[in-house]
Length: 115
Image 1 (tube, rainbow, N blue to C red):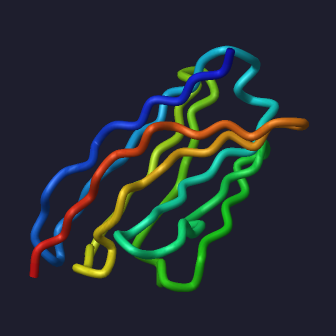
Image 2 (image 1 turned 135 degrees about the vertical axis):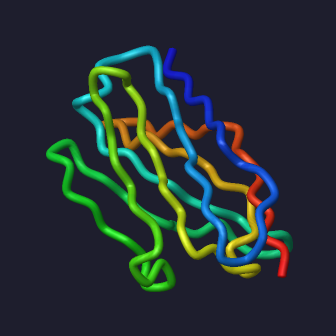
């Protein structure tokens, strides 16, 4: 049974930084791509960044070089370093594990950016 646990969210002022973490358990972590998604109140969930098994990352345009996704296969963990946060980054951030046949989601961590 794959489980994902996010942490690192919180309240930060605009221009500040946060580092999110997502620890995965249950199967061979290094074999799956991983991603960060977010969902703001009243909006659909959207992709933020994805990192493949080789460490190659892709970002949505709104990231604009402010976020960095990374993974540590030895710790079965991915990270999202978020710098220069904006109020529009306020959302629940979810970790997703893209399995071969099944995707898995964490419970999410709230990020709130005040202006």
